[in-house]
Image (tube, rainbow, N blue to C red; front, side):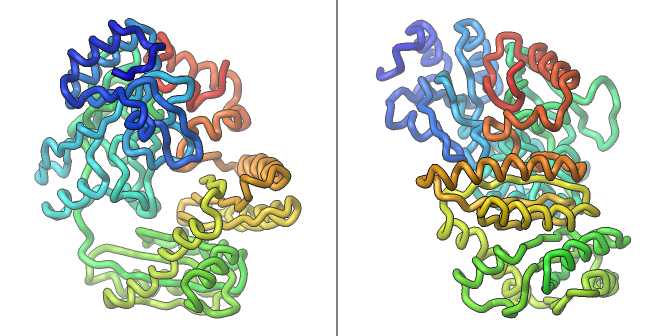
Length: 465
């Protein structure tokens, strides 16, 4: 059978009887592929289970409680914090087979889905009915809705349309104690009881396993305008972000890249930007076609000003693709130059963006670490990439000290340590810098209420008591 000997045979036999053919993965080479996420961490699970529906999830959780076996829920492994890695061994519960869209209800602007369906599949099904689901991580083609909800992963459109917490009406789930629960509503208003929906979203599988989600859909916009603004320095771009976000017209995307990011793009995609460009904003606005010209002009005026080299407006599909080519070149450039970079996502109030960017530049110089910054500037969510060589212990030590000071800087600016990547194990030991002991104590009590034996994703999200 090749199941790890550390698991009781009666437990393994019960899982086989419950899940049937294909429901339990025992071979070591097959289990290996379920032991990673998009961090550099990996741990071999003792067993992998692949339930097909809510009832099977419930029974798996109850069996894990009975035999005191750690259980790690998993989507498609695109997260970057080690949240899905089965540290210490145990059972990985893969939701890949629960990938159905159960219902689309255009009249009430909602869709009911299982957690294993991809974000892209949801977008395609919604678009066929004239809608979209606002959260749009860059990994949409390969990330699952369950993973999006586990980390509250949003993407560029969050600046206007919000995160999963604002775009999920209700959930069906199984708690760590094996209790079935339904949270939320099928309406856009509802205040009966406590808001367990928003509690479970972002909890990284430490409280319950989500088996069904009711998503709030938004009508597709009639039209969209795309702008690219180029600046001589980072402060000019950061100040423009504050001006843009103070406008009555909220952009549906406002992306930022700093000088180091632009330098990498030049090395990867050639001379696509002026030689003196030191920062860049990608701006999109959507809405009714009849008023979009006026909205675009207001954003162009806000984006201009001191330090602005030029603002380019795209109108045709070809022009839009040409402008976004710059931004899309960044990820492959980073993978080529620094495949093992330290990638963090932090958030500060938009008005503190200039201080954040200048502070990061100072830390990069002091610690002699290259830092590349880009991200969702409209809500202050910046991806801070430290390019350090993991094979150089001295450089990695400087990078770790630099990262610690990055987090201190963010907190001094009234920010938060994660916007959408989550905490997992990578940031767990820094959580105490942001959350006071009394509040952490309440969070541990909530964890114990949902998961009395502590079997769900142990060692993640919260620092030890």
